[in-house]
Amino acid sequence: MQPVSRLSGAIRSMPMRCGRFLTVGRKSCPVLSRNPRRHRPKIFAVQAIIRRMTMQHEHIVALARELSLAGFADTLNRQAKDPFFADMAFVERLAALLIAEKERRAASRLTRMLNEAKLPIKAAPEELIGDEARGFKTSIMRELLKCSWIPFAWNVLISGETGTGKSWIASCIATAAIRAGHKARYYKVSDLLYSLSMTLEDGVYLREREKLSKFRLLILDDFGKVAMSETEKSILFDIIEDRSGTLSTIIVGQRPYNDWHGFIDNPVIADAILDRLSRDRHHIKLRGESLRRREASFDGL
Image (cartoon, rainbow, N blue to C red; front, side, top):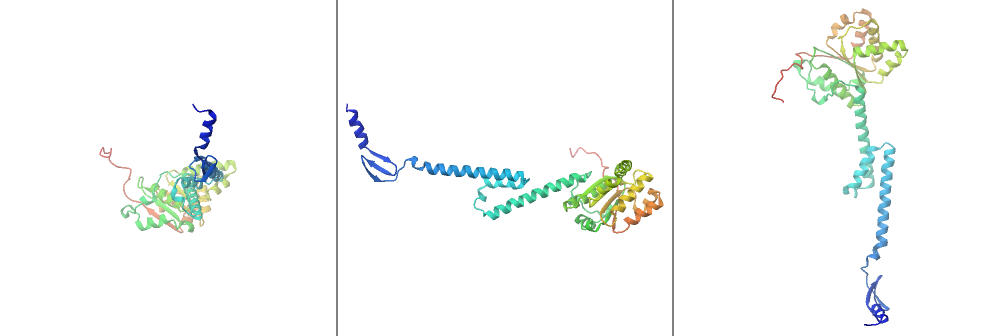
């Protein structure tokens, strides 16, 4: 058995890779090393950069959400996971982020305006097709859905028997108006007149009336269905007067326009209301049987 000193000397004389050199004893030659320790500084540097970039990304996302830029933040997260955006120029990526935020805000505003409108029916304007047999033409419906008449404060009157689709048509027009950026609000005439009459005693009547002026389009449904008191007739005149020539109104009811005078049963108020609605208005007179009447069938179950 060899002495320990000889073993240690033999080990020192064995070829060893150390650093960048191949060492034989005390002599060395410049040979690239395959020792993974050589790459550790670079690995640590890359990992540090990745951690720093991740922290920066998370900070930007958090900052975007703090500024209520949810669309910006969500799109930035998607960009980080999609290699397609890696080669995209900075300006292009920034434009994509801003467009996403703009679209999110537009969608959020549309949803908010639809909820605020309180429409009775979730109607899709694209489903509204003219039917001359029922009393309205396709060309007229197309123009109404463009909503180009709203800035001119035109009014629309829709009359017809029960179930002919009056409220549905009004909801379609209102939905199209909201999509075009106009605020709309739906009321049943009896409910609105009653709630406003209650404010007369509270002294906030004028304030409540002013709230209606923020809606470019006001839908008054079921006109002529319930008899009005003298106070409610005066309130109805105030509403029509406030909007005359400045804001649009859709009035929906079973009674035709020429029958309103008898229903209102107050010559002075009736003349005043009809006079203000006689200018720049379009009257849709629906005909036909109720669309709600149909035979039950098991075929569709």
